[in-house]
Length: 205
Image 1 (cartoon, rainbow, N blue to C red):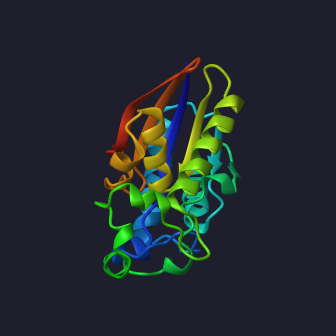
Image 2: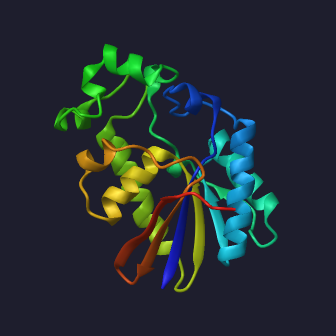
Image 3: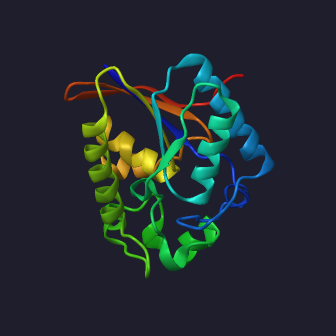
């Protein structure tokens, strides 16, 4: 049985302000840096992590690097753009509440039309979900039996993974809240089967 530990990046100023980040090169706040150090220490104490994969965006890269620095047993991260957050194009940097006012088809409570939205210079939800699902399929094939892998990524990506692994449906999962910054979601793999055994939990220490 293999384990994938999925960690959302630490807090950024745009998280705090409620802005749409997308692919913006936002950096961690001091609180975010402390969150990354804490999750790294906690993972090192509770798991034998064999390798670390991270989105290549600044906030995830910094989270992965600080987590590794805080631990003795975590290997250096490998960066992969497949695990980026959704590209929001021209909507990047908007306050989320303003975005929904100006573009009501992006409102989380919207129906299936949310899957057809395509912001200029960005990704539609359908394309974003397809990218993440394809990345997950390819990633699974690289994981050896009994291997434990840490994946540092984004809230939107984690929601798509949960919709895929737990078969919850895109609309239901994407309309929910993102997991907390630097929380851990644990997925266990056994052959073709996968199971979410921990979801959005913050380390206690």
